[in-house]
Length: 507
Image (cartoon, rainbow, N blue to C red; front, side):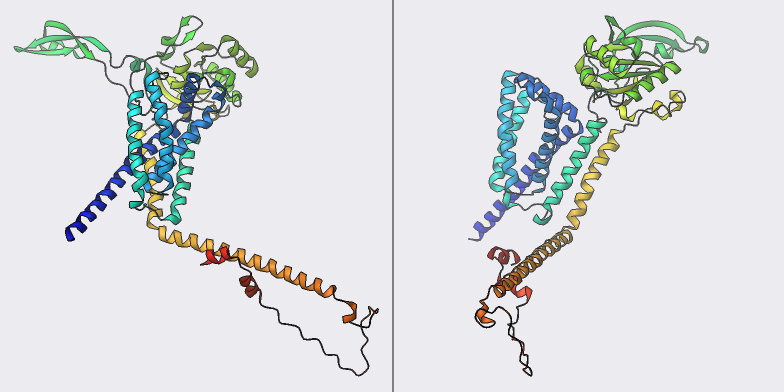
């Protein structure tokens, strides 16, 4: 009997650990997937466009950004609730339904391959369609286990404060969606990061040939490269040389596959990325859909570049006719160049976006609303804040994300009893307030009914038949008021008229 009890305890402990582990795996996957989508809403919206084109649902293309935000919010909130063990009954069910939709979809993508990358982790992690399908199968199996066992392990937070974790998570993820839509993604997972030198990134990873020179001094031979040849005055003498292949030095980003700019039929890429001075590119994948609310700032920046001798080029993938319409409507005079639409979308998000280069290095990616106005454009770019490289430190930004989310969650965890007590007091105060108002309303209704009954009494009860005037008091007769029945207190009346469900709530 004792051994049976021990085995049951061990089994219960094992089940709790499995529930904890599966919550961590499934919830963590959903949190990561939803958050990287929230960091880059435009990237997910472009992926939705690919899906709608593959399934012939182009009429939904106008809502891609809305779908992008909604998907990131749903995934993030489901992951948070599953990770914290909140709403232990409904959360696994919702996750199960979500995966029941996504798993067949990814199976179709793996078989038909209409899209090479499903985009489930944005640009942060790229998975093949088959890898995505098997990932969803594993998550679906773990979720089925949680459907039946999630209640065996209590959540991290009490029921009274679980809605607060959901509310803060919603605000948190929407904040980064707002940053990604109106500015640039807070974390950049693309190859065109700030600080990347485009000419170097175009050739990174390619084998290069290098000459090695052999010199001799005091009977000892040593190898040198072309950059550090020894001076012959020190006694070095040339012996031989040979050629070898070396790996190009790695840049801050993966190699860039495509970066070609055309002016008409002429390739002007080298002219732009090899310019040692400043060069500003106005990027727009589609000028017919570009936001023209800040065209004055853009035109002022172009005039400033003309005055100080900097290059300013509008790079688009629109047709020449659409480009002409844009120039006519905005009064712009800057030259137009053309680039592949996918490349423009990969470089920077938003339509349009301003890219600041110097010597082929990306210094800034700016939304038009962030551009300096004409009152600030009074000095050369190297003397302005706009001309200095934007500080992009991904490690610090990741640290800020963790602190901004986990610190409030930790404070709530440490003070949840006090917070639950405050919430309970507020609920009780609201309930008492509703009771008092209802009691006052019932009291007024009772007084009104009493007055109506007195007015409708028969005239014979107050005087002679047919005479509606009150009886005159006789001289010397004592006027004794008729005793009235005492009116019950308002609280007693309210309590006597309480509905059964109200008494149940109060209990």
